[in-house]
Length: 255
Image (cartoon, rainbow, N blue to C red; front, side, top):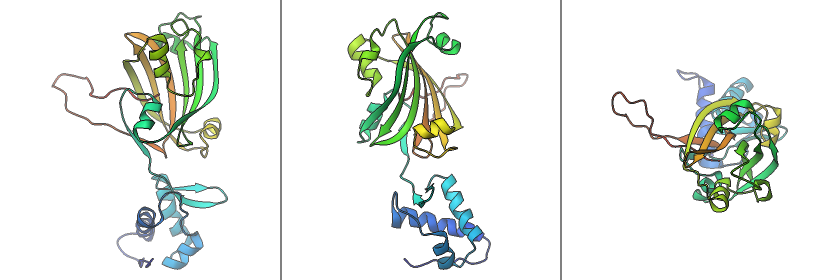
């Protein structure tokens, strides 16, 4: 590789080095490859350690690079991209040609919190199924799901294989096909527990989806899914509605 000369000029040195590293990551190294060491970059481009670290830090923030403690800095794999649509996680990953899998953390009947009971149309003391899962694509943790499902229309749910699509179980076993959902999206950073489940550093940016889904008007699901922001992104197609309308043109997303 022929080294680009980095000099004083209108663009700061760390910005110039950032461009060099971005080009290197995209066209020379590829996903999971280690970038040159800080000392190597200092020597190769005749820049200071602080310049190198600023350039690398900005690419880590943007998700192009990631650090592994004690090992070095590596090129990140491209983020999975999803359009907002009503489909299960398993269906979504299969469409991409990836193999979905699930780590079941727990399933039990319990009384849900009041906000969950309200969204599911349950009495204050009515039980529901609590299902916690880690969802993986090609063996890599992508999302942590914490979901609640009403017990009465789903008897014996805990006796089923919950390692795949719950939506398929609802439709095939109980005759309850999920056909609508309301979803809210926000951002968080991973706390210690979530980071451990997702095999991610503490503080990793998360995309968080809260979805309430229904089958023929019957509330069936209240789930909060925390996706690794360095491995997942969403795509939305936006259009201008008729004047006076507040409706949006997006559909609900994955579980």
